[in-house]
Image (cartoon, rainbow over all chains, first blue to last red; front, side, top):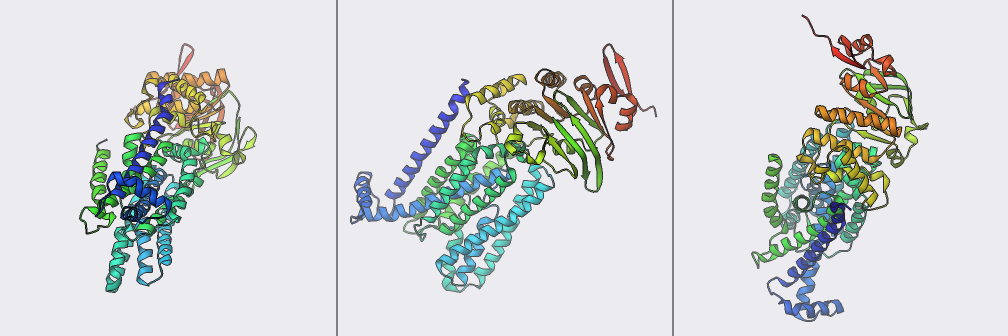
Length: 341
Length: 257
């Protein structure tokens, strides 16, 4: 066999295993670090207590709190990163992501409206979800028109990106409007929701179910995604049902984003820089990229959140601040590199 | 192999092709010839199923194009688009392997026979040495040969090519064309291609379809259709034919004014 092929599956296994180890390590680190550090030696006992369901010791109680928050960070990061991979394949543009395309801003409008009207927590989640879905539908409708007119993928996608940016600004204007008329008491909750904050995020099962479903869909269509990323609409001559796949991608990435923002508010840049860095390191093959992006995205957000709550301790920063401060320079660097090519 | 019945194509309100009744049999190599905007690419995209006909219908193996499941159809015909835009840095070998998609729907990774075929296709287009390269780093001609290699890897009886000689140097134009002619002759494959080089078209094709761009068309064996007067008419420029040994050379007459 040609050496190239022998490596292919082997490489995939190595990459996924490495990232899995990194993800577990990131969770452990986030469990150990904090106002009161848990030494590595105490971790096994604390973990054991936690698993047995009697977190009586201080270490076990701290661990329960920290791991609960870290697991929410992980599922949020994984969802955002996976949504980024899907949107980039969909638009055949490595610069697309849920934040840039305005999905997060749409969710912000929904969530803030619900917060302003003092609806209950589940209504806030539902409104954020609806906001993201509405923006995603709007974008899909615009994308359809581009594609129907047979425009070059590049021109079409950049038009769509620009449309997303405009939709995002429009949503932000609505957000500003709501912030300016909101009563003092609710302002802090609203602002923290917008920046993206994990401190108050409840541990929920739903985001995991959404992530699992999306992962299943993504892995099943991984090969078709490669064909579509390579051949655009001509992928149908290779047996890919392009229309159905696009619709699926839009729906699932919208759902992932909506689920992520309802857990943690609108956290930026994860969906953009994690897939990008992985493509650079492991290549663009979606069969590797999809599981890798979920693991790396999760680990990235766990570490970012650990930083957010320790860097200026006892002050807690919203995690969105950290991802943006890491993400913006990385994004600009990548943009610059693309230009040079 | 493929037939069109009363096929009509429009571009906006402009009629490109009207009432096209066209029969293409196994082992034939067709060139579609016409001016810019005459509807050559539109016709090819319609045959590939990427565009709906504005009138009439198309059958492949006596089965209506719309009745074919996409995956089965992908094992019947391959399509080479006129231009490509590579958004991601796939390697050359990955682009060729992706053409094996219709053959292993249920598997996550390609099998070893797919890999053999991919390598053989790269070898046929003399691009094996590029296998590990990033597609975005290739020259236009290299990218074109890789795209044709992918098409060969798809291993279909019907090949639809939009300007296959595009961006190729002289030597590769000749070798790609003779490869296509050989596939028709030896493996009974069917080729329909769009091209602007009359000499290349005449040397490899068995048949030609001339398009006027106003609905008019003319189809038939090369010897009948590719006459100086007809071609001049369809291409909108006087064309002269020079006999050179066994070959016919087509040259445009120069404007004397």
